[in-house]
Length: 584
Image (cartoon, rainbow, N blue to C red; front, side):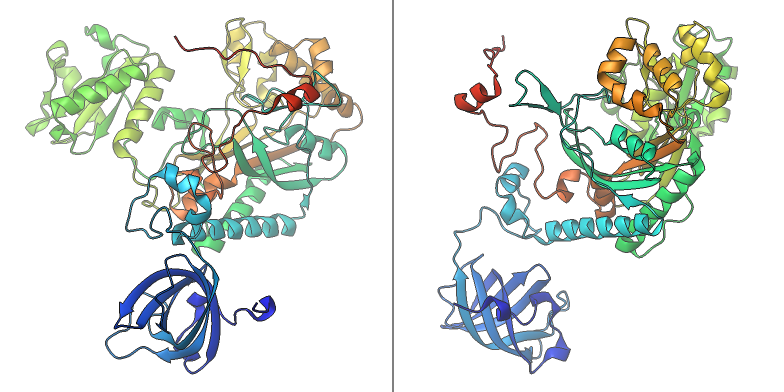
């Protein structure tokens, strides 16, 4: 058996012309074998650094994905055989001796980008998929991001602290994953949706500046940018304002961007939540492209067209969209209805600014002319209009804007945006209690605090919070806020949310008690590392930057999780399963 200390002298992808004449030992997987004559073969050997060509005599017993050690001499490739597409394309290893370290069955799919592989097959054999150039690149980008974030936070005086994974269940906006307690039958731990309360307690404890690359878990539906398990850079600081939080997070994110791309992030523009909704129909606007929402309500203040007698009328201009077929327009109309609109009005702009639309006959000449002038639409464009209450209009047009204009993730560069001044509450529930837009530990704007006690529930929806989000290319990277640090204000917030004094004490007594012992003003932020890495790697789905992700249905094709547990385990935990409900 080869001594593992000296098993290889070099990595496959690092050999160059400067190594010609050296005797080397390389280890890896057989990527390709090409026969050359009766006995000679060219073997492309692969490790995580790349490929190198090895000329092997008597390679009939070598197959794809065999694990081998090859020793030989680096030499110049013969004239006319160099490969400019390979970093090692000028050289090859000759006079080779081969040691088979392990054999392999034929892999379940080809390990190159030339063949599209079903994702379920890839995930079921993720250990093979990880060998691909794509996955090697993505996971190493992720490692670079983590390292750069740690350096940036360390350099700014933050202390890395690990917080518990088994905690009490607290309302964070999503379902908890719960863990039964063997020692306390009938009681459960929750897995943390975030380290929110513990990092606030660190501030009470005088840590001053805390950070953690934290694993968080939320039992919510999976999407391209969402997994049950996710990693976030979590940070909190005492005696700081919103401006300081935005500054130190910008430093950390910029360090990660520069580490991966070689380019500095630059200044990040800022936009209020209200402006983002009005201009883009979203609180996480993709600012890589235009197609902004156009305010048209004043144009139809005196209209006779019933569909436009609404609180709000807005539209978007689709450049060149007049070429859309009727079936395409019908498809967009159906989507708008599914998103909540009563309908969608379309208008093609023809020569001379004339508008071609089924509803044109219901509008006055002045309204039609004003519509073209206000929108700036030109010949060949398409106008899409929605009329309804303002939030719904903005929401539907925001989705249509993304549907028709959003570029691929690899185009348009990295466009960061800070969104600030979120509402403290996003709506009222059926009982009339306000629903928090962020978690319930966010400080309201000082000038809006009086609105909390007017007695009018609608006034609560006018309260702004000291909350802020970082957005990248239309993805919400993360959120933060100035926290409530006074027990009386926190108790009042709980009361507004319908959480009475007894429930406050049972669920949050440890936090409220801590506030009695000198809690400093503090603020913080957390952003998703999976999302940042995906965008830096040019991936549309965060599964491509996670070593062992779940599918969209929440299953793991590799380990087959989730799986039942046996009766003995259930008995030990004091649990009994109810009969599974059958679908009708």
